[in-house]
Image (cartoon, rainbow, N blue to C red; front, side, top):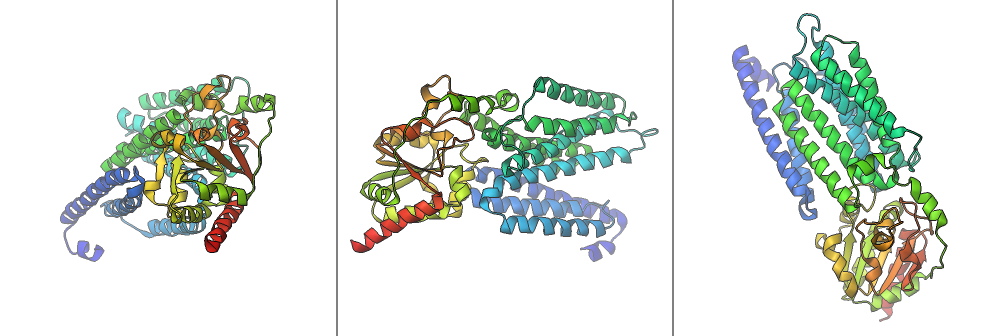
Length: 480
C-alpha cells in the first residue's frame, strides 16, 4: 500500500488516503452498531463479538491510513507491547477473573484518552494560538472522565481481586469531600475553557480527577460491583467520544457514544435489578450496615444433606431449575453443572437455568460461564421469565448463589436488600443449596432461604460435590 501511494502525487495521495480512511471508518461504525445489537442476546453474542473485533480492526486500519501518520516505528512498538500484555490475559486468564480483566480494560482505555488529551493540550501554542473554548471544553471533559475512570477502574479491579477490602471504606463527611473534589475539578475545567492559556490549572484538574476516581469507588461494596463496572464502562466511552471531538474523529465520536450510552443503559438495568438508584449505589456505601444487621440476626438451624440424597431427589424430579451464582464461578464448577444437565436430560428431566441480572461480579457473568460449558442458550432463562415456573418446580438447585435468592427481599422491610427483585427459589417444592459454609454473601446478611423447612444444604466445594452427585447418577444409570 505504501509503495502504491508513493507513486502518486502528494495531493492525490492525501485524497486517496482520506477516502480509504473514511470508508474503513464507516465500516467500523456499522459493525460496532451490529455488535451491540447481537451482544444483547446469548444466541447471537459470539457473532457480536466477532463483528466487533472486525470493526475494531477496520478502525485501526483507518487510523493508520491517516495522511498525518508519517512514521510507524513507535506504533509498531505499541502493537508489540499490547500483544505481549493482552494475549496472555486472554489465553490463560480464568473465567472467574473476567470482571477484573474488564475493569483493567476500562482503566487502560480511559488512561489512553486522558494521555491523548494531555498531550494534545500541550501541543497547542498556548500564548499565540490557544485552542478554542469549544475544543477546550471537550478536552477538559475528556481528561476529567478519562482520569477518574482510570483510577476508579483500578480500585474496582483491586476490590474484585480482593487485594483491596471488598467492604465499603467509609469515613465521616466522605460524600462532602468527594463532591468537593469533583466540584473543584469541574471549576478548573470551566476556567480552562474560558482561559485555555492558564496552563497551571491543567495539572490541578488532572490530579483532582485521579483522586476523585479513587475516592468514588472505595466506599462502594462488592455487592454493587456489577453496576460499578458498567458505569465505569460508560465513563470510558464518553471520554473517548470527547476525544473524538478534540481530534475531529467521527468514528471516535460514534464509538464512544455507543459505548457510553450502552454502559449507562446497562447500569440502569443493574440498578433496577437491585431496586436501587444511582445515587444509592455511588454514595450509599452498600454493605456497611448489613454486617451489623447480620450479626443481630438470630441463628437458625439448617438441614444438611449428602450427594447421594441429592442425586436421588434429582433423579425422581420432573422439573429442575438450576440457579448459578458467584460460588459456581469461584469453584469453576460450570463444566460439572453441564455434566449434571446431561445426566438429568438423558433421564427425561426438564432442566432450566434461572439467571439473575446481577448474579456474579459483572453483568452477564453467569451467561458467560454457562456458555463456556456449552449449555444450550435456550435453557438460560432470565429472572422475570422463569419466576412463575418455580411453583411447578420439583427441585431448585442453588449453586453458589446467595443474595439473589434471599426471600427477605420480599417482606422484611428492615433488610438492606428489601425491594430487590429475586429469583423465587423458595417457591419450589424442594430447595438444594450448595455452599462452602453459612457465611453471608456480598450484602453481608444471612439468607433466610437456607433455614426454610424444605431447604437442604449441601456443604462443600461446588465442583467437588457436583462431581459426586453426577457420579451417583451415572452409577444409578449403569445399574438400571
